[in-house]
Amino acid sequence: MDTPRLFFMHIPKTAGSSVRRMLESAPATRGRCCWLAGSDPAVDGPTLPCLETALVTGGHVRWDDAAALPGGWSIVTVLRDPLDRLLSLYSFQKMRIALGAPSDASPKLRRELAERSFADLANDPASRFFRFTLPTQTLYLGGAPRGFIPVSGAALDDVAIAPVHARACSRLEELRWLGVTDTLDRDLETLASTVGWPALGPAPRSNPTAPEHRLRAADLSPDLHSALRARLAPDYDLLGKAREIAAARHAASR
Image 1 (cartoon, rainbow, N blue to C red):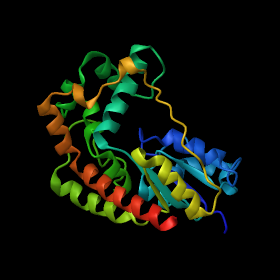
Image 2 (image 1 turned 90 degrees about the vertical axis):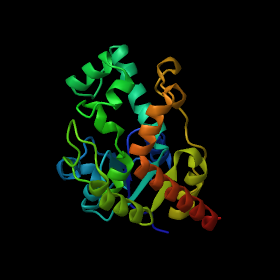
Image 3 (image 1 turned 135 degrees about the vertical axis):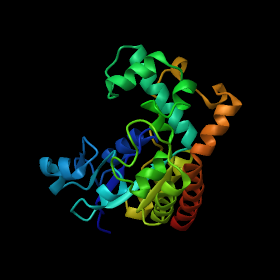
Image 4 (image 1 turned 30 degrees about the horizontal axis):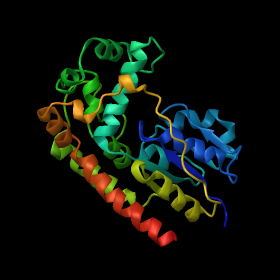
């Protein structure tokens, strides 16, 4: 079986770094991974000669931009519980700011994270952080363009998100491989079987956020927890469908 060219659509805080390490260590692709630094392959791609011979590429890139990259790439991705993903993202950025470590957050976002609570930011549509509380995984798979979500302000209403969510759900079946974080080791077995690789083994587990800096769902008030679950409803629906597809593909691969 010919090794396919895989584009890993790395949605932030979905165990993507672990998946990247697995892809880099696979015998069939070792030395032939070429990662994009930014979110626009049309900008990054021409500056990366390694893409010509790469078997794996990817980055924090949405579906439409990934699909437009020349070279016959098959898109793969991993999804995660939406609220866990959001809290992980917040906790990681908050920890880096507390420790004075470099952060890719904008100066305004860094100030918000340093001075305001999670609840305050998550309830304020005018904050820079508020956009991270929207259904990011749906927006990645649904192909929502850059600028679809304003830098601050305005939650997405049901009318705006509905066509994006419908596209995201239909594209789950188009993915060459689909993983879910809570069944990642099983799903990596499916990946190896699907593309004809030797078994990949369990994914490396590491959490870059120290335990004392982690905000957990149990720490949220019931009202905030309910509000975020409702705001993230498209992602929860997407995750439910992803779990069914991943389980069916694993069963079929055995």
